[in-house]
Length: 545
Image (cartoon, rainbow, N blue to C red; front, top):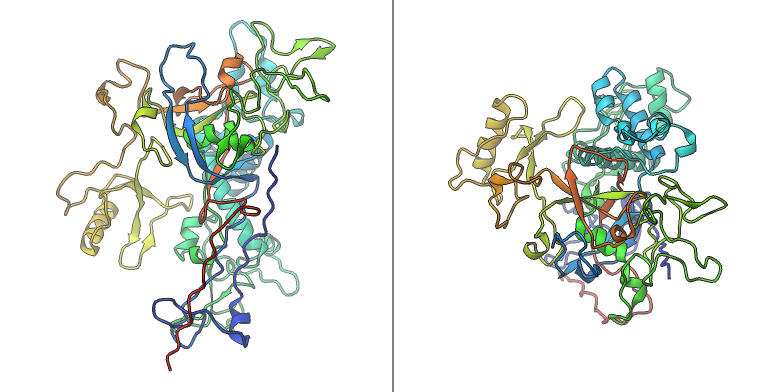
């Protein structure tokens, strides 16, 4: 059963409409003051609802499951998928693996945005040499797999875990920038293009942007990406009593103060990121299709039902369910009736999706997840939203008095290792940030007022093994990252969602790709229709007289 999901995107409450409307304004439940009223301080309240997912994502309703429970054997004798019941919150996940075309979009943006920075472009290139084998003729893939249009819809490979992180950050910024431009909260794409060309059509402005850095979500939300040539024609009315009319490109003040979007507005999306190992395994197993009233009627070994790897449906009976290596020397079957219709990888929308609507969660390419590898992770991590790999960082302030973020040469906020496990006092924060600014480059700042040392790197937290030996006596270190799912060159054992392997974060392979995820905010129930719910009364309005 494939669950389809449609949802109307959240619409920001129109402040202008509210101010002019004769309908009753909402009240604060704790002070009785009305919201969206510019006469009493301009407190704002927005519609509470789930945001629509970002482009390419499908919703995954979370729940409890036995992590590692689908593995029926341990042929590698690693003892690294010990069963553990955990709870995974609801989230969003890419419907397909990231494709070559998706990556070419990323490379193109780098080329046109930083045309003189070849180092940045070079570092973003996948390692196409992963196709080379000493005793195989794979050289055509080295030259063609990434760029030839015949492979546009194939999953990108040769991408390291580090490169996947950079892609997620880039994708987040481009998505949010597009939302703001399409809705008129930033200058439109057409106006921005005319600015670059130095010409403007009637009703448009060719004023040079006051901030020439590329759009960055964090910098924008901190109020550092605005001004002439940046602000759109449909910015949000600012009803704060301290707001001042903005100055248009012609030098005249606008009729009403406006402001950029904020997190509170619910306009911008959450960050794209790699899924955690628990999220990936939960989504791949997709037991939601076998569940009724909290009862799972049938477990799974693969992302589909049954014990085999062939389809049991009448129209597709006998067809292989995923792209994998059926046996030694058999990557595609016999000519005239190929078993999985793929020799290496296959297009990202090949084979039937699982019950969450996700394609190729088994086979095709293994996929990077966010977790740092440890053999005994399942025994040690939390049972809610389990994850190993936290490296806590804070945004550096260039001017702590004005809360201005420090930026690198690409317009991104500079991140420093966190210096405290709790919110610092204002004096401590100032001292820490001033020391960071006095240090050269990205040197981490020590907290001069802190007592007990704080370690922001928790990738090896609660590990019973001496971490100083990692990378010396074993291949495992804090750079070791988990990948899952099996590939076109793997046997069926690795198609089981519970199986796991690792590779260093700066390495890549012709068998490893990735897909992105996104955190869901708000209530976890995605499909409430047809299910019982308690009735809840609305709070009573306060009457001052």
